[in-house]
Image (cartoon, rainbow over all chains, first blue to last red; front, side, top):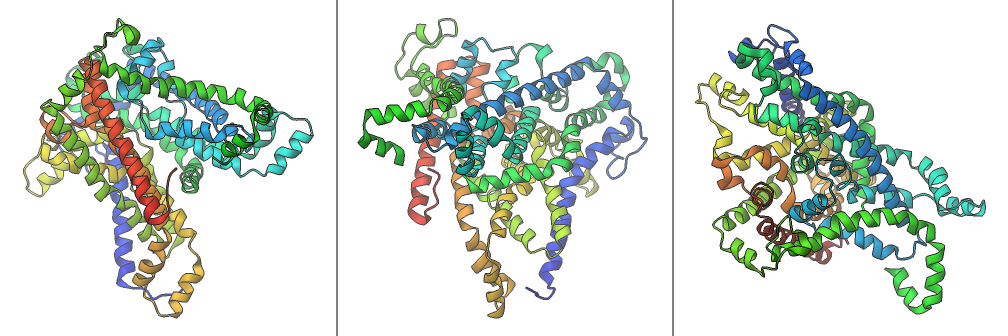
Length: 287
Length: 311
């Protein structure tokens, strides 16, 4: 397949380079602002390179008890939420992947129907409210625990495990639980890793459930604090320590909080990209 | 569906044997079953509160019935046309501009000769997908503010500063533009996967026949990924009306309601901010039914035209 170089290759290359710049520049810009001096930023001098490099903004962020508490909350919510989601999704996907599961077609429809017909925001709120979950961690980790899309990916993967393995496990006297734990799950590590990452990033980035179900400030996850500081410009908890710096520091602090929030995701991304991509491609197999 | 038609023939004792054999599976499935009943099906039934004068103190079983009062109220509401129009337009523009972007991107990536460079572009463009809605909205709010990044660049070119986010005419562009920024790379994965599935001998044959690159793209590549495009289109139609609602919530404000306020944000505002629960539930039903009709018709259409379907 050798074709000669054309003008098209040139244009394409330039387009791709441009796209890289457009993708990365906003992230780069926030990074350099967060480590520059507030004065230089407000004079509009920081566009390409940081100026007056210092970590003052990060110091303010890490000195803020609200940010730290929300960071801890988010770590807890992410850990617990991911665990619950993985367990429930597996318990849903495994039976639905088994041929002899009596009523499989109806149960599949029962689950998949929820993908297309939404119960609605207000009634769901009432259910969560009625269960007494408002202002508890449970409101964040249980109502959205199973993503049907993820469940279908997992089920599709389980279905590809040869039936012979199930049969030999049965012959050896293993029940469904042992087969799931000792045969199916060990063979499904790639899809489980993908699910783990999908759910974990989803919880880390989740904002809306906390917005509607939490009133208690102590329970706020990072994304809510992030919204308060970055979008609403609400830096009440910092004002006391900052005083006159407030005006010039505000942009640097906002971007520093953004960086604190996205750093974990950016740091693990290069190492786990493979699993994410795998998940997105599994989607093309579809259910 | 095959198993259920068989069981009708074989009778009750056969069914009982099968149920017994699946006992362990039922025990597992009980947990997700309860989950879906509580958090998906109960709210569906709970939608009946739209026909009540719902009070949070009396609850669903204690609130008095109110007939179709709230539906009539919504249909006569001055906001009705605005939120319906905004929902439809925002999604339509998204379908026109956002949906094809990853396809074009995948085709362009596919034409890159250097595999290493291709992988590099891919890795970079996937990154924004992992940023939260709050981060993206936060970037937009700050970059687009009167002294923000965009206006700094405009200032360098001698243009006046624009407060983008308080101008209704900019909202859709900002919303869809940032969607493309965030979703372009990630959205292309599925098409790239489909591209690798195209038989390379087709290209070889076409080359021998003297087909140009453009013609190969038109007659081999695009038909090769057409099924995937259709499936993605269907999935998109299904979720059409609810997508992006959180970002709107973070970006809109009084001055931009005119173009930014959609059904879901209206439900949120009336229901959870103003506590007009029954009214908001009525609006919500309107949305659910509308999007359900949309999926079903999209599914039928595509079944008719090319066999790709969701269920």
